[in-house]
Length: 291
Ligand SMILES: Nc1ncnc2c1ncn2[C@@H]1O[C@H](COP(=O)(O)OP(=O)(O)O)[C@@H](O)[C@H]1O
Ligand SMILES: [Mg+2]
Image (tube, rainbow, N blue to C red; front, side, top):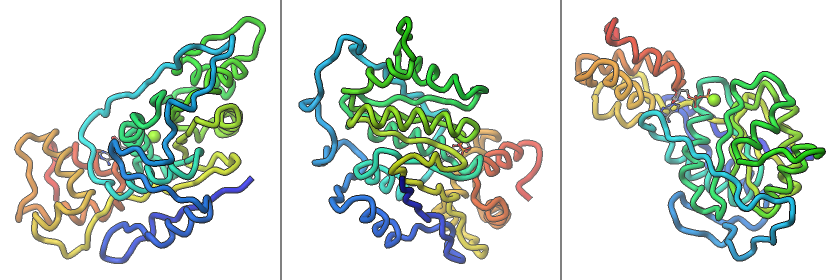
């Protein structure tokens, strides 16, 4: 069992959150000597599994696993570099855990990755939200039901699910694993062992600690330096763009300009580029001013 830790959220003073590309590359090389690059989009790299290798169906397999790709609730801001890295990572790891505190943007990023790369998987992708699930023993049934796999009489559902995914080439996202971490780890371990064509993304506040897991820390949005005072300059930073977008949704006509740019920049910095906190603050501009 080994876990590859990524330290992506290292902050460069005055430049907002910055990725350290050399660390990323070093870690990728640790995972696999044969690094295949994949740029988000529809270009199929040598790594991506094709239909041609798909195994035969056994008697107890379902013909199709259901795909489930929820639509995004509103505009997605920034994260281009993270998306590129995550899509490339899926070329070298089958168990990717997006880690970080609540509100940092794990779910949103996982959903974005799923939308970006699912077309590369012959059996597409499936998103399973475990957030509302109270009991660990319900994880299997939640995953099975999202994938359209039913219970077989007298047989553990995990066995049926493992058979159903065995010959599939798909991307499965398990969202909000932290409160059911052991159960999620057990299901992931079993499904990964059953299906060589399965890739998994988990979102969680802590790692799942499954074999060959790649743990990727989700960084905050970039905030820019304190002395920013041009609206155009400020809009280069993700946190400021998210604030402007959500504030305009709450108060039509809201825009960042010379009068409020300093206040918005210092608010986003005070909120550490945390997307949830920025959205909550932006929703209040209707009642309160930015200042
Ligand atoms: N890059 C982004 N662009 C737009 N909205 C974002 C982005 N990242 C996060 N958000 C929003 O911020 C809030 C928290 O993000 P979420 O992904 O739910 O965090 P987590 O899963 O880490 O708790 C959500 O409302 C989400 O839509
Ligand atoms: Mg989440």
